[in-house]
Image 1 (cartoon, helix red, strand yellow):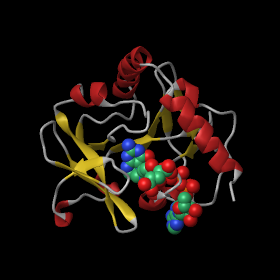
Image 2: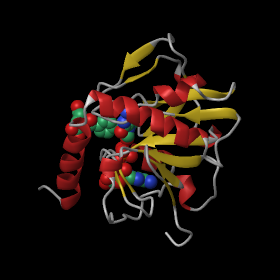
Image 3: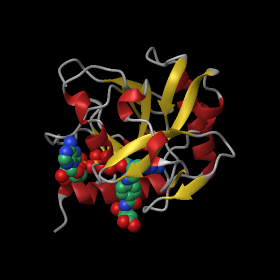
Length: 194
Ligand SMILES: Nc1nc2c(c(=O)[nH]1)N(C=O)[C@@H](CNc1ccc(C(=O)N[C@@H](CCC(=O)O)C(=O)O)cc1)CN2
Ligand SMILES: Nc1ncnc2c1ncn2[C@@H]1O[C@H](COP(=O)(O)OP(=O)(O)OP(=O)(O)O)[C@@H](O)[C@H]1O
């Protein structure tokens, strides 16, 4: 059965993929500037991004401009949850079950979400209250469930094209809200009540 959430995912993913290369280039630059100027942007420690796929907004412009003291990481799928590993251009990669590249590292050296200062998260859709609609695997929600009842860090930052904004998303009990959403043109902060 197809739910409203599934139908919305299909529509927003198609919209995300339909953006042109010039739009993507400009968007990645605009997004990087917004991410770097966030008040919660750390000057040191581990920060996570993602390897853009399926038309997601790219993070290379942000990654290359990070402060020297911060260590860029990518998500790594582990049984039932997400962990993270530092990754620099040229480091070895493997392809995960969804066809997304991830660092090729020993499981024992992986970081937990709680070890990170800030996590930039991919999303399919978001609303101005900073609710997130993801790909539907629940990966980030499971790894970040501890943020349902504890404060930042890690700061949770959604990254999106403006075209991915919707008026309002239904929230499930397990949905971990974002602290901030950045698009190329706007920064949305989660209202204290949401
Ligand atoms: N770039 C990126 N990395 C990410 C995520 C993401 O959304 N984007 N994730 C966010 O959680 C995690 C992986 N979760 C994912 C969940 C579903 C699909 C996906 O493409 N599903 C396809 C079916 C693919 C298949 O089963 O072969 C689909 O629904 O069409 C991809 C990633 C961790 N890494
Ligand atoms: N904290 C949790 N504990 C157990 N199961 C969870 C938890 N969070 C999410 N799930 C499961 O994951 C499934 C998918 O959740 P949801 O549709 O919110 O994913 P999503 O946020 O869109 O995906 P993703 O984070 O992978 O991009 C839910 O049906 C739920 O069963």
